Amino acid sequence: MSPHLEVHNARRVNGELLAGHRRLVRAGRGGNVRYFGENTAMLSGSLPVDLSGTWTGWVDCAEPAIII
Image 1 (tube, rainbow, N blue to C red):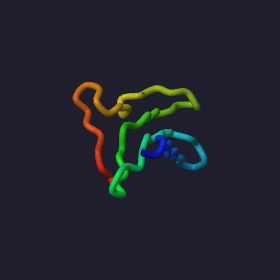
Image 2: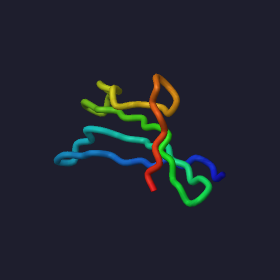
Image 3: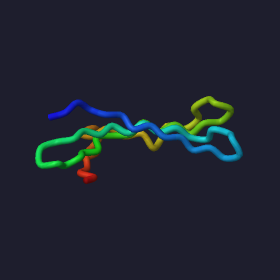
């Protein structure tokens, strides 16, 4: 198995950063890519104000997904 990879992206409107996402993925056997969780921060003035989209596989019944 390969190491976990982090995929980062951001949402900007008129140059203002509104959200940041860090997704945790890992390539597995047979060519599958699994999605193990996401850290999501909604921002206001560059400060996090909402983390409710954050989840981690195997925590609170969240299951990792196969995305490819």
